[in-house]
Length: 611
Image (cartoon, helix red, strand yellow):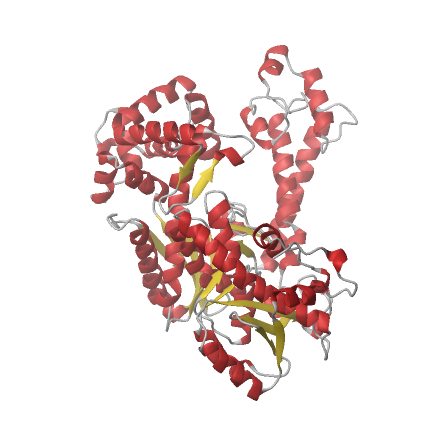
């Protein structure tokens, strides 16, 4: 099909012109009889069918920023289905009920950003079981989350019009332009599916895609469920942060020159240049423009300087206030009184889920703050997390005999590492030695050098370690885990040669497409972190089935951890069901893995209580 320019159309209905070029007509379905005829027609077709929805704000929330996007503040106006051929069905859900088209959901479908459509369909009472996603198909191919417009331009040589997207979908009578616009998206998704499917097969990325596809239902329900948050107690911790912020600010004003703006990196850098000794300045990291860096990591590495402690405290409390302070209440849903964050499948380069609006995967580690993520009266929180999942994945992908033996025997790898480095029996390892070994295990897993390990141990685990001690620790670690050492060497060499690396389920990271190019630590990190992410995706796909008949639902996913809310009397049932889903997730990716002590689960009134 030739590239279609917007200027070709004298009338402003570009969507209609594209459909005409494809010889496809929208067919409006607005009553029970036409709905049954459409369903009968679909039954003769082979799926998956192109699926799209158009949503309208609920009247009372028409001006809410999430209206039309949040399923609790919206309603579905149109459901569009294209199964090939000359007609695309546009079901007007203001005229027919979802019960009248319930039979449709037994057919396999594909949408773009299907989690969005699934959320709204679930809220409306529909239950599509088999839904693919062209956005995730493209993500498996490129690690990007691209718009339908971008994919249509690349694969179909089409420039999709989007002006109608923000039109009033709640109007009693929709315009011809609106109908054509809605219908076209279902057609485009259908056509893209077949192209992307062939690309996935050609590049052996089908499994990578299917893991994300099968986790979509869990993510859609997670976002729809939301999490209960104690905003009343939240007010108390905000007051504490504000006091600490003011105190740090006051201390800094006594140390810094008058007029220095604490929010200005340039002014802080100028002050440092004037007040630090020449040796410290010589070793201080610089920005791209040649200024002394004043970011959090640099300040942490120079915390021996007298003013840095106060500056760090000021910056940390300021970040807490800006991210999790009073504006956090803006995320409260006015109907559910819960927080409904957005989770993104394929949201990171390794395949891990990402989270935003707001990010509830990585809130402050403060126990009181995490206790705010709680359960309403009569309900509890069940938290289940994988034990040492990245170390377990490292053992499996590297085939390291010492690591595998430890997990097969249900032993603590941190204690084994401490024993090996200190040269003492396992039963003589102290709590402090185990903590240091924890830093060593996770730091050296991704190829840190001695100086990096010393900094990592200090700032992540509170362990004081000199560079010389880190050198000794690294050598002891490599001597103990020779299989892992060999895997690191071979993986990094191959990645540098080919400029790409794969996760266990096949996701490809192409360093040629990254600005920084090949990086040693990322070459080691990606297969392991990606493998752990794939285990969690497989677990999410199992979770819904395991929770059937139990009054419990998912409220958060934090990389290696699931957080579920359950009615009190079903808490133990939910705990068992979650553990089984997570074990099954591991065995889906690594069928021969040991599952001894793999999952730890606890029950409490809040996230903090159940950790």
